[in-house]
Length: 89
Image 1 (cartoon, rainbow, N blue to C red):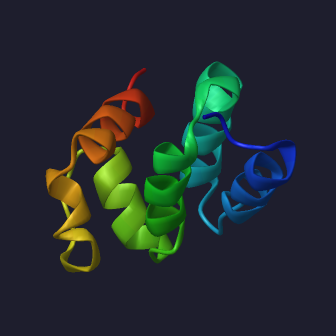
Image 2 (image 1 turned 180 degrees about the vertical axis):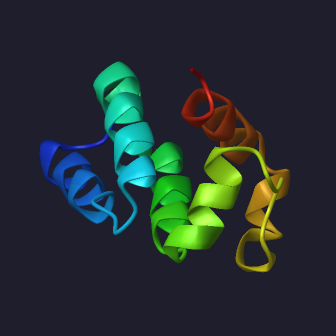
Image 3 (image 1 turned 90 degrees about the horizontal axis):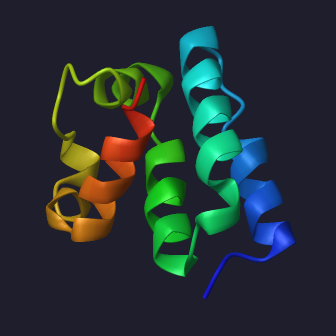
């Protein structure tokens, strides 16, 4: 089941970050995949967007595979799939 417009809007709003680099990566991701996201994707994205900017940047650029706050989620297929899409150039 895909995300509702309201859920997608909330995620996009939460994606507005203090670091320009994060903004650019997240905007590109939503432009490419926003209409394909489902409820599981939304849950994982919500967890990612709750991170502080530096932890999120470390994940997005591949400096780290996971952070302590997402240790359990990082093992899921949804998390791995979303990270691969977020890290696409």
